[in-house]
Length: 341
Length: 267
Ligand code: SF4
Ligand code: SF4
Ligand code: SF4
Ligand code: SF4
Ligand code: SF4
Image (cartoon, rainbow over all chains, first blue to last red; front, side):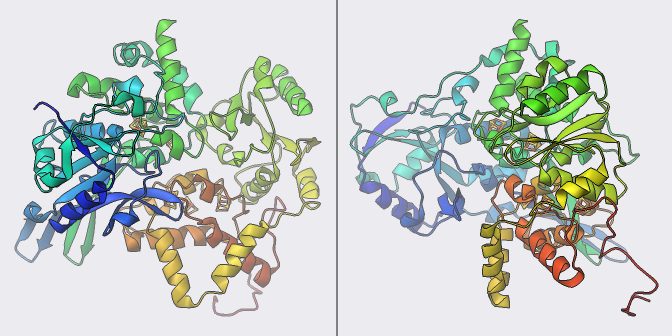
């Protein structure tokens, strides 16, 4: 679909929000609570925070929440029954205020959740979600979208992208069919596209490394002291994976009361030492350097190779969240340099 | 600081140790942990007010132990952690070389546990005024308010366990919360699961927490969970008169049983 462009007046932004809300959509938008900005269910436009680079947690929760029921079960004397989750009841959601990198993040999740088995729960949630992104006019040193094929005004993954122009109005880019349907809820709010160039309103994110140096050469550094060098200070928690828009690993746990219960899908992280622990006690990823390598290789080698997408969108959240300053772009620059040696 | 670099260099050169754990320049404003294994690189060691991490968390990490004998740049938090680890039989005197450092960056020679104990006795190791105020604020709440306050904080938790990983005293190879057969506490990060995790963590650290603040600093969701263990410090102090982490052979008030105990409920 060709991208259609329009103008939305500054004052009409709130009206668009109200229209979608009135249409019965659940509106998730960045909200500042106790100093942190994160996506939350909002009732009024006034609750939305517009002064943020990125939310601490990514937007992935709408389709891949930290806890997802995947099946209910019942046991009785002579039978066992599995009861599927009713995916038809998931709500219609609008994700408002997503950054372009986060929108691309859903491509990685899609690739994983449809690779072999089509994950009906994830797909049903995403199907009901419309993504309204806002281009970035601010960034920090941890942002590196431009090094992984993204950009602060990128349209990929979004249904609609809004870019604030110099007079405070918005350039609207309608990217998908879902985006069109959203505009159709309030056509009166939209006017002919502004002539002002989009790019001059975007933040500048310098390119830090050439991603192909890494994705095409991973075989060269699988066995390398660099992994130990980089990961000695890593304490093996789940912070980086849990804030990451593309990390999709999960754990399965049952919660039961008597003979009946629910099977849950919970976020997990390859950086936990127990992640690969076998029942026998053997752990194929025995040390943190192997786990750190897995984190990087999964995103920059296995995913590009098998799923045709880079598994990192350069949001820098993991670097911001890491308690011990494991700065991912710094480590990727090291790898790209290593290849050239 | 030059003294520390010189000492570190010496230790590596004469192979007394194979690695020096200290602080180096970070990618942002805060310094990061570095692991110097080459005498020529000891000038990467720094010390200033941005050197905050409690490096003791690395002492028992097997990837670090595997490198050989350790020397560690030790702030008062590191020293107190060492005292706990020693009291819990995780460290013996002489297992590592301690490069003591004062808050203004002066090297202090601490050749053995006794020297550490004597040095710690000269320090004020209480929590900060800001933390005291927060505790007071929580104490002043009614039970209902307190419940609501903590529920709001716990609701942000997603069980990434950065708090646990950052704490030198959370060294269990398999944490209680990771057990799923049986599940001692709910594994999922829902309201009950979060609350039980925090209660359990606080209880496991009661009388062992040395108020380094690392757990709260590590939390990506900014949950002031250190206040729970700090409250325990107050309780320990009030009930048993102990300041935690001051000597290498401490008897733990909450995990010690004596026949002559004046309470008889336990018998
Ligand atoms: S790995 Fe880090 S920078 Fe890349 S997408 Fe995940 S959180 Fe963002
Ligand atoms: S890189 Fe940082 S956030 Fe990730 S596991 Fe290691 S210490 Fe935790
Ligand atoms: S670091 Fe914070 S979010 Fe993570 S488990 Fe601990 S309290 Fe929860
Ligand atoms: S919370 Fe308790 S069981 Fe878990 S690592 Fe800490 S001390 Fe060990
Ligand atoms: S303040 Fe937190 S990290 Fe430090 S010892 Fe206490 S519980 Fe552990």
